[in-house]
Image (cartoon, rainbow, N blue to C red):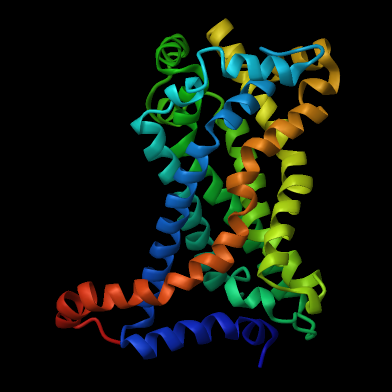
Length: 348
């Protein structure tokens, strides 16, 4: 058996077992599982992001030009709660709830779609998922051409998925940053049209940040846990803490620079009615040096905002979601496939 086939048997065998036990074709089983996981991630994202809205506002202020000098965290907290304890929640409208759901569900769906599509096209296995993480890594060496194609699939999947995610979510994030009224004023000043208006201001740093966090959640965390975590210590609890730690000390250390650039870009846009990234970066470095884009408090505020949702997402994705996969397949079989699709000749 070739190395790629040997390492991919667990995912394929799981799909085959589901297909045999439910009597549905592989294509229906795979589509159902991707949809189920995407919806689950979306619901998870809405609940976690709404609960952590005060932390998000603190992080947004911390990574903007509205706080500077000493006691930046105290300044950000004061700005966050300047309209009272429920102030941070007042900027959350129906569009934000929909955007959160789409952001997380699209992120999950897009990554699975691009990962599986590119892997199939290039003849390599997808990223490790679910029970695979608890299995010992294969000792069989892979040929160089397989390694190259696998690397290409792993590089492209997060980029494509994150750009799609930012296209869905960035505009709503900007609206939460400014509030509905000021957002409308800034948008009018920028005079964005078409795709640029749908994407929202500061799309580039938003997409770059999402690439980093998508890689952290769906690629680096499961891959490094699978390959390098001591086999005798693998468990649901160690995956939970490993994912949380990887998010805090790896993903967010890099993503914080793009979060800061995003906030400064929005402040620059509100003040000048245009966006010039070179001027924004130069201005920040001249005024505050590297602290304009990375400080301990900025990192800490980003961790507060991000970790409740993004930090435990690898654990939720790989350990919690698989628990409901069989129920979702049974539902589709009984309510969709048997009464509707089987009659139309969709067979194995």
